[in-house]
Length: 464
Image (cartoon, rainbow, N blue to C red; front, side, top):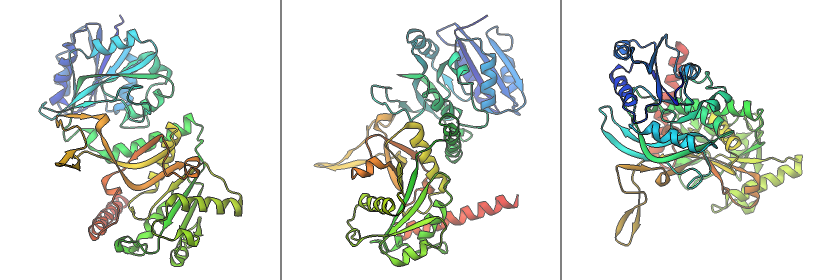
């Protein structure tokens, strides 16, 4: 017997939450659904909780050894009888109208393959923290680089099958992997109604930002290799270095954990896999001689007119390009500008930016952090909030993203117009510890502490 919608709940050791998730499906105002519960090798009393639903005709229970989320997603896809399919994580729950509203969108809009709602953030006890409102696709946003939430998105099953399901090599963030595959072929849609309760608690995967960002790097790399035949823009890295900075702490030879500040950028940039060439540009002979110690780094001595503190980096890059054109007839498609004042940037950040440019076909990519604190302008009568001041609602269109200065990647046409960034700008998110910019003694001290922690972590991993 077929139903319109298949809901599935993958569960691993969420016995304290899963009953609430199941009951939210049973309480739906729409009755044309089936529910598949996948107990993914739980070691708590999940089996006991879900077993009381075993005799319900619309519910199927799958008991399996622990296989992980992405494999469980594909198992649900194979078992699903529904025309549409939606995942509900065991620690979250639905609004009673979600299946009715989202399935009606897919019923009435045949061109749409995927639909998702706004949602509530709730704490461990189920108290609402905030409402998260997403921008309306094609009305408020065209660049679809912020994915739908993987656990409250309804998808046509035929679209999932056509995309060959989920990539099982990725252990988390399957929603992101599916999203970039999906928008490459089908149309998404969203409704500005909060229809989902998304729980934040200590065991929640979304609390592990480092793992999420690492997995997204791997997803992007795999996507470009598979769907773009590994074809990426030809990118030149330019490292502009001034011999003496206005901040003594950010001078190139300031010591940081025993190495000159400049060493951190040079030692990482040569590890990047997706750069074609690397040029260090400086007016300082000591800087240029130091850079010559590193393999594959081309040095460029700036002309006198580009040695002032007010020199625009775009003009430095244009001189580098002109020099390379004259000497080796070298042309590229994009420029990646890297400053030595963000020494915690790793080489994979550069590669991730290039993949981001490839996937979303943007003019520029910058490295950012989202600013979650309330920010203010100073106006006539004092401070006035920049963002929506309703603290219970986080609106995507009011989000503030702060560039951290670690990376600027732009197509060469943008630079040739004398601009640093183009009109269509993508982004990559970096961890706070990777984003530190050296301007003070405190910044140096903080970087030293983080570097020591990284070294100790690497040492411990090598001992295992």
